[in-house]
Image: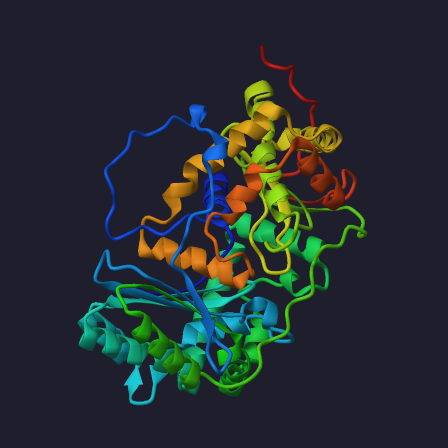
Length: 477
C-alpha cells in the first residue's frame, strides 16, 4: 500500500513550476473510454490558436445536505475508482499552534477503533488499495485508489471513511508523530532551498498565516497534545469544510451514495472562513541573507501574487511563463546565454488560496551576487515598461494550446484538475483558462503586471558565503 502521509512543499525549481503552471492553466478534457482514429500530430509552430474551443465535459457537480461540495466524472476506461477529499485545513489554519495541521493529517492513519496503524496498513494491502495524503499551507488532502469491484471497493471505502471521520488520536500515537515532526523540522533546516523559502515567506507575508512554515517549530509542537489535535479535527475536518472528488469506474448513483456516506460520517459544522488575501504592495523592500559555505549563492526575489479566481490570474501566469517560466525566457536568455551568470533561473507564482508569491529563483557565483541581483531588477523594470513582445506572446500561446490534451491522460490527473477547479472556484470547464489565455493581448499582460508588481518593492532572500563582490562579466559574443 502506498501510505504517503507527507508535508508537501510547493516546488521552487523550474521543471516543477512548469508542471504546476500547465496543470493550473491547461485544464483539459477527460480521457474517454473509447477513442476515435488516430490523427497526425500537428507541429506547435503551425498550431492555429483559433482552433481551441470549449469542449463538452461530463462533470457532475453537487453538494450534499451536510454541505460537502462534490465533483464527479464517470469513466469506464479502467476498473478503478479514485476518491480524494480536500479540507481547508492546511498550516494557515494553525493559529497559535504552528505545526498542528501537519500533525493532525499525519495521525489520521495511526488508529481507528479496533485497529492500529499496522492493522490499517495491512488491510489496505490486502485489498490492493492505495492511500496517499498531503498537507500544505492551504489544505489537507487524502486520496484513495481502489478496485471498482463491489466488495473490494466497499471495504476500502469503509476504512477510508473511518480514517478521515473517526480517528482515535491516541496519546501514544500523538507523541510518536511529534517526534517524527521534530525530525522533519531538522531535515528542513538542513535543506538550503527550504530555509530560504522560510526566510522569504517571513518577509513577504509578515503577520499573514502564510508566513509560518508547514512543519511548525519545536516550541509549538511541545504544547500540542491529543486534545488539541482532536479539537482541530472537529473544527477543520467538517463536512461543510470538505471538497470531494470522485473519478472512475463507478455509476452516478453509487457516487451519490458514496458522497452522502462520507458527508454524514464527517464531523458536522460550518466551513472555515476564507483566508484574507495576502496582496500587500505597500510594505517596503527588504533583503535577508543567510550565511552558508556553499559554492553557489541561491537567490529568491518575491512580490505578492493573486489567487486563481482573480480576474488577472491568467494574465499574470502567462506573463510569468514568458519572463522566467519556460526553457527559453528573458531571465535565461540574459542571465545564462548572454552573461553566463547562472545555469538555471525561473519565475513562478504558486497556486495558493490567498495568493502565492510571484517569485524569481536563481543561483550564481557568490562574488557576483550583488551584480546579478541588480541585473534581475533591471530586467524586471524593463518588463514593466515594455511588456512582452508579439513573438513571446505567440510562443507561449502555442505552448499552452499544444499541452492542452496532455494533462488528463489518467484518472489521477483528472482528480488533480478537479481538485484545483473546486478549491479555487474555477469554471467547470477544463479548457476555460487556456481559452482565456489565447485571448490576451500584449497590452492586457502589460496592464496586469503593472497593477500588481512594483520595480522597487522586491523582498529578497539569499543564501551563501559573504565574499568580495565583482562586477558583471562582459557580454558573451
